[in-house]
Length: 177
Image (cartoon, rainbow, N blue to C red):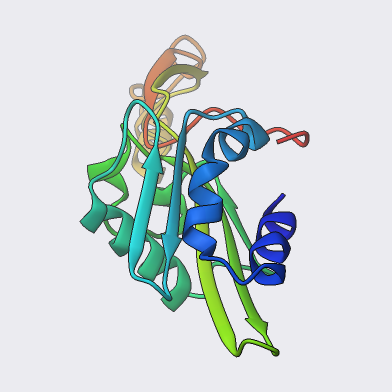
């Protein structure tokens, strides 16, 4: 779809941002996620669509960070956790954008000498999830030493339920997305 949009705008020498804007709902359908951002590095424009959106400055910051830190591999960046991806502001934007799929497109039309650089971002919000583990929370050598001395970790408490909250992670991205 991205290639089709770029080619159609370059063939008729139209404004790529206008072409993409007219087809934003189709781009939302591509990954079936409600929030999409189209960032034109060339024209310094941010287009957004969705119910729970980042502020423009947050979109620019995220886009710049993805580009500056070489997070695009062959034009694609994807994660369900910007926090685990290393983005410094991940916790601040987790309720709007914890999981991200990004497409970085650069193209040049040799006849018209026009160049375009776009970043398309699809986002998913954080999905907090309670995870229960079996096992003692204190796995240090001191706990083992305490057991040897008649206290600390033992068979009765070594499989106690530990509850942790999973944060800063979105629902998974599926292959069809």
